[in-house]
Image (cartoon, rainbow, N blue to C red; front, side, top):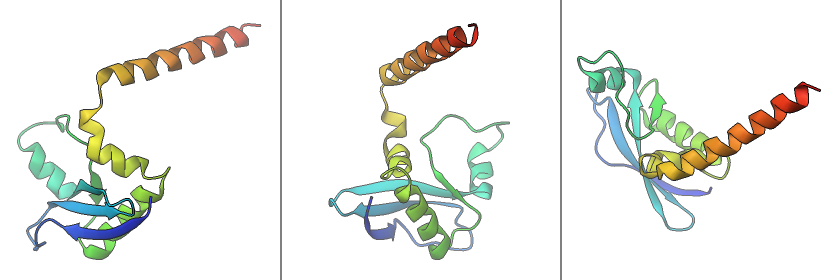
Length: 118
């Protein structure tokens, strides 16, 4: 995945712990991914003991342009942008696709188990 432009959705201040980042790629499509710090995750958790399910996001130690850019490029380089795409569309995946992947994996596991018995 080739990145053309990275833009922050809003200004980052010393109090900012999470922000949306717009990532334009060579096809012209713009992905919007959330980038957060660990402190930002704790704020989002509030009084909960764990993080409730939500769309995947990129976690960084600090919200700086350099660090966010490095993280975005790392996510974009892996498997033709798989992780950027997952951050964009992860909460829109149809459960039937995941069920199908699970079934295929189960069949493969079963096959391996049967092969080990011989």
